[in-house]
Amino acid sequence: MRVVIPEGGARKPSGLTEGDARRIQGCVVLKKICQSGDVIFREGDESTEAYLISSGRVEITLHSEGAGLAVARLGPGDIIGEMGLIANKPRSATATALIPTELEVITEEGFEKDVLQQPSRLRTYLGRLFERLRAMDTLLELERKRHRASADPAVIPTVPPLSSGESGSDPVVKLASVLPNPVTGEIITVNVDRFPFRIGRAEDKGSLFLQNDLSIPDEKPLQVSRHHASIDNGGGKCFVSDLGSRIGTVVNGVKIGGGAGSIVAELKAGDNTVIFGHPVTSPHRYTVNVSAGR
Image (cartoon, rainbow, N blue to C red; front, side):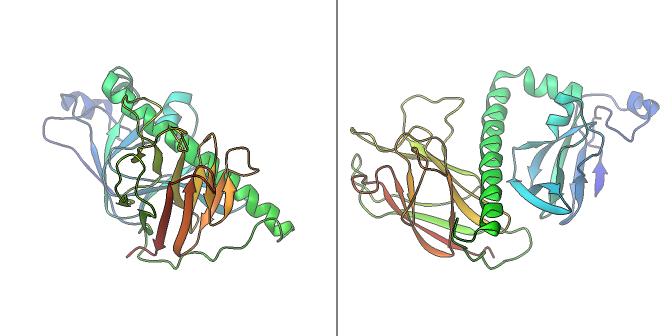
């Protein structure tokens, strides 16, 4: 991993002396260039700066009892490491570059000035932060289910992991509606191009808490909630999580959310059936195909 000082200067990150900082004028943030496998920071490290991902892919892992749990894979536009600055505590997780990655270094002063005090940037940041918290919550529930299953295999069925592709590659996920949309009359097809991939009802007005990647038009009686479900990957698995929908989601015949005992269901390699809403009356039925990344 190497540090690049852009022409025009930068704020002082860790590693530069005060004399160096005085000679570097302006407010351009330093850049870090990471190769695949480079550790950006480790759990327990001192938190002195945050990073904006300019390009590439970063995996966030938590470690417990010697094992690592991947809780997020983040890409361009995401900020990592900022919670340590906000809470003034050591790093709570480890960040590793999955592919060649470019980062912009953000100091505490820069984070406050360039993110917290800029309404448009703050809105985008908070929306992504809330989604990361939701994704982490669903991953933790998935881990709890696995622990219960290890004690009693009847608790949940065992789903074979996806065959691993190139290091750092995400699975390839494609969605296609089985029936025409009741509002538009069209078949909806989409390639999942980021994780988590958020799915909900199409709305006329945007919301800080409603930043869907797939917005599904619906009509009364409504089946799809405003923030219905997401598709994510981690720990060698791809899964669907219900995000507090009113009626629930059905994944390969198993209901999650909407009062069910779980909000997470794993996807198998190949074709999966996902229904947003009632298992019988909802017209929002999708085939979700999952294959290993290349």
